[in-house]
Length: 523
Image (tube, rainbow, N blue to C red):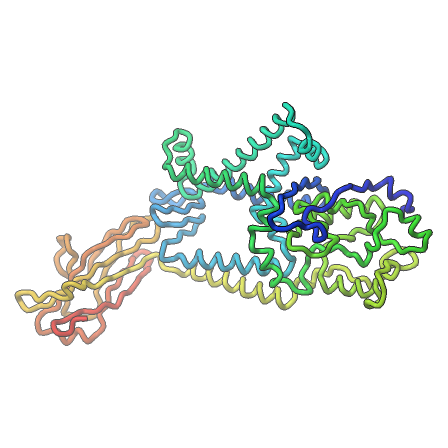
């Protein structure tokens, strides 16, 4: 371990105050103080780069992926076709009446958020939330043009010069370009991307497309570039909800004051004076990298998105000082409380880091560290079980659903017609739904009432009990059907009467049990 005099030489103390710390937090309507987060280096920062590249890649590139569905369906892999009222997702096609699949996915997303939060805190907020990802992207641009934290602070405080104007114009121009790309990518999910792109470039696209792009460009620019942490603090409801999802075994970013306090920049003098000294050298590195402008050493705070950049910053300082990493770490309240009890003699005394270290300076065996098995506790398993069962249910329903549907609506006026020969005729509006992108010939058959016959209006096939109906690919075919029961056969109405639609090739079938109305018994 390095001697105390080396601390000052190795670790420079950053002279700053956290913007949103509890001890300096201003009223809600106080003028905003800008945050200039310093670039962090470490394993969590690398993981955030990976997540950012993955999520942005999925968002921007997905509309360009093609998926062959045949000649009668769009070949865009992911498409929300509002005009045709279809949702295409690779090999899955969702019709309007099947919207419960989308609703199920939304419920699964909510349960997944509960699952992640109960296990690892606000990991969604810190790594995969759209606001976090786009703010990270905007910060990359800002650092590239204006430099890291100190350079950006100097530029912000300086007078307006040609150089400052050039940098600011370049930065905001790139931000607007990112916003434009964001809005443009969004509308490509609702129309064929190559065709819509050509229309946009030739100014032939519908006005709603340009309006949507303008709105999303503005919101991306304002939220990701200008408001940043204020969106998470004041606009997002999740920080207020997440507390109900956490328990004493949830992982959250934690400052381990049981080994860090009392902090001191002058360890040698403090030791000579008989004072206890913790591992924290009060360098403020954790504050400098925080995109939310808080001091994690103040404890858990609403503004913390658990991005873990403070862990990377602190680990770097501990490496320089030759001390164990983990002064700031992911920890559970249960482990933290146990270690705090060890450092305070079960609360009977002030924090003394010497209680958690042995004669050789290493942490004693009684100190509790993260155990990955804590993630697989009852609450998390229950969330996962419900989430998985919903997923399996949706998959089963998706795999077993019929791609042929028959809808029948009985005429209400008139409910029946008595013909000149005494026979009774009922009319029905029949809709055949062919839910695959290929043309099919459907056999429409009448079962029950053996004496009755049916006739399709507008077709020369005459009367019968079965007809072959050609239906278009991915279309609804409507037809008017008349069912006639001869005079003297009214007793047959008491028996079941059904219309059956069947595809002879795939053997898919759908059955509709219909009513037949007679004079004096109309319904």
